[in-house]
Length: 413
Ligand SMILES: NC(=O)c1ccc[n+]([C@@H]2O[C@H](COP(=O)([O-])OP(=O)(O)OC[C@H]3O[C@@H](n4cnc5c(N)ncnc54)[C@H](OP(=O)(O)O)[C@@H]3O)[C@@H](O)[C@H]2O)c1
Image (cartoon, rainbow, N blue to C red):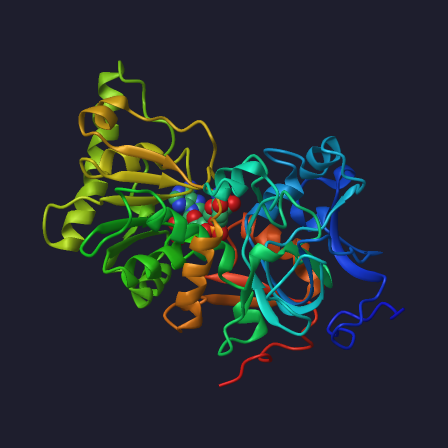
């Protein structure tokens, strides 16, 4: 049996060691990410029938493992234990680029040595809902890989279902390839997954956090469909970055103060002040467009701070599509704007295989910039999540080198 290898290397392709290094979270350390993650030596998992073992070259950072580290809104380890998992640790990481080292007995079309990335939507291939041909992300077994599931990409080897495996773009380095898939596929479902509100040519799309993970991908996906993206950001630099990705303009949210739950509808003075700010925010959109047109689609994730404004500014019969509540979950919808203008507030989570592959096809074709912001070393996993939580990461996506010895490797022309 091959021995454990140092970080920054992998054994010869196909030779699987019994032990590996991983950044783990444990229930007794839940809290600030900087302290919750620790490097431990653990077993290398064995792939089940439909599973694939990947030697991780680089791992992508996502907000979901900020939540996993904090145990908010759930302790993912306790949740898995309640379902019968024998493991008392969490190896997170929902984005990976790497090399296939082993495949389960029922895997076809994927072989040892393939260079791959991993789609974040995970479900049991034997789930009757999935076998019935329905959207697997709505199935009872649907989960987010490397968050709900164990053995994500913050270990030297990660485990995923065969339906999650997608080809790595040859023109990208390992760290670039690990950057965008979770946020990109999520944004793809938000923009293309909801019938009647799939983005179309000429649609105005407002994107909160335009320079962040979800936002930077949403801008590009909307642009590719002929949409007109407008970003919301908190600095001029971030705004200019969004324009470089295809946004026609940006709003600096620091110019406004009406965030969070609006005053109660019976508070006339409070409502008047709140509405004045919301109107001024909406006018910024019209000023950018040069016409009085409101967004048909709004990409939401801040949640409690911004949902009231999103509902207010969304066009008649438009959609606010939301994948998170980063600032809080008690978002208020003023039903007057919601029902009279017949707007849609749509939840969205992960992506199914069709959506992940459609997104990856754009990456393979070089149409999407993976928006690599920063590359960190393996021992930085906790601090990098801490910095993400505190809004201190540069624009785009941060990745971690795991098996790759240095940045800049893995691309071929
Ligand atoms: N459900 C899913 O499938 C799914 C998938 C991916 C991500 N998510 C979730 O989506 C959220 C965003 O993820 P991400 O990767 O895009 O994070 P990110 O890279 O940190 O970007 C988030 C952006 O939100 C903006 N922001 C922060 N506080 C804000 C506030 N109070 N009001 C308005 N905007 C604010 C920031 O931009 P500015 O400061 O420039 O405004 C920041 O760039 C996270 O909660 C994540 O867990 C969910």
